[in-house]
Image (cartoon, rainbow, N blue to C red):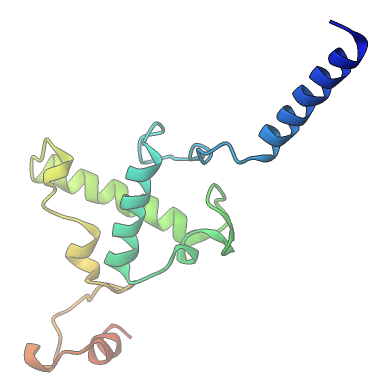
Length: 144
């Protein structure tokens, strides 16, 4: 191999390395700071769980997680709502496993939605309005 061939091969290798380094790795980083959910929970499953919480409470990610899209800090414990969510997850798990005897958590009988029904504050008493007249506005008024 002559000198020019060696330089050309080295340049091509350096170019290929720099292009590869500039490309996204494809896989997002593993979730961090999981304290209640399994630490090895696959990201797609974690995202489904988070969507379930969001729907059950009628909130967006920023309710519990620090930051603003697109720069969220999901690992941060800065918001008290995240600590509350962890306590509620432990409570739901205890109710299902100890009180109701659920062995397979895919068969849970009590979920966040059981009480929250799409609102951050669950009702603490039966609505005073007839059920047929309940709307999101009247429910919010009942919750205070």
